[in-house]
Length: 81
Image 1 (cartoon, helix red, strand yellow):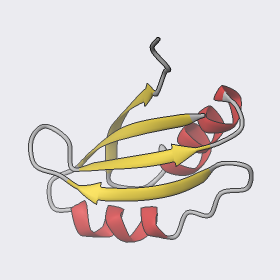
Image 2: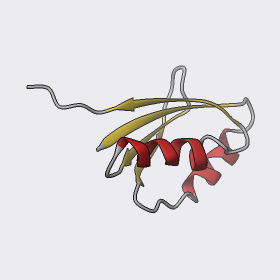
Image 3: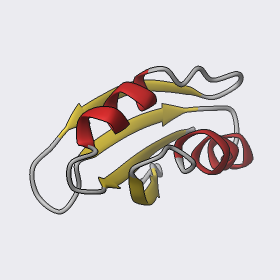
Image 4: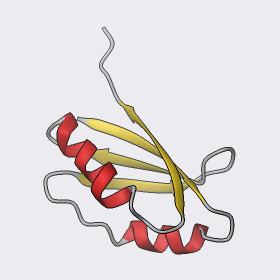
């Protein structure tokens, strides 16, 4: 299962958030990539894990608690067709 996590940070905290997010190590779920982007979000992280629950745990217990992070939006990839 794959998910895209759209991440917003507090002004002036973007570099600190990037550093903290780079240190996150997953168990069953992994951060496959993370890109800084322009627009309403500061980063987009790509997660892969065995289940929706494992992805949710990483978002709430590891990513969402980073100091300077203000909001996340998680988009689960789906198969069409």
